[in-house]
Image 1 (cartoon, helix red, strand yellow):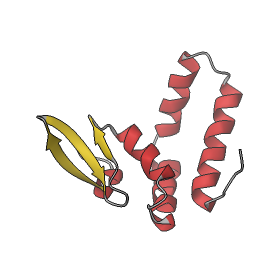
Image 2 (spheres, helix red, strand yellow):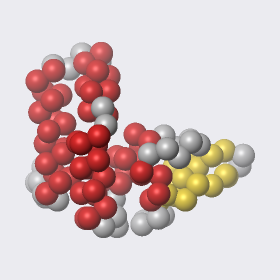
Image 3 (cartoon, helix red, strand yellow):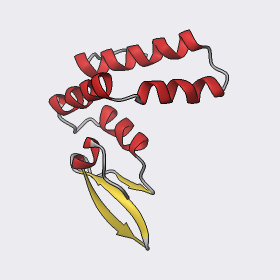
Image 4 (cartoon, rainbow, N blue to C red):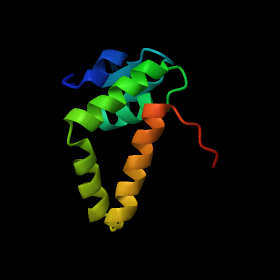
Length: 104
């Protein structure tokens, strides 16, 4: 594991059965072979993660990372329309920033 992103501060690093893992500091969810994309997704949906943490991490993504561009490129390779993907990413950021509760 290479803890380079800010999200790693919200997880405990561990080894289980000689495999790397991460445990959420808020809810205890364990991830084997953790990667930053999975950890970011978990924090954005974790019911125990404080709202201020979610908002701070969402702002970091919007202001400083090319994470959206990477996700967009990946999804476009999977055949999704650019406008549809961009709209999904914008909605995700709004939900995280404003802690909106949407009914499905």
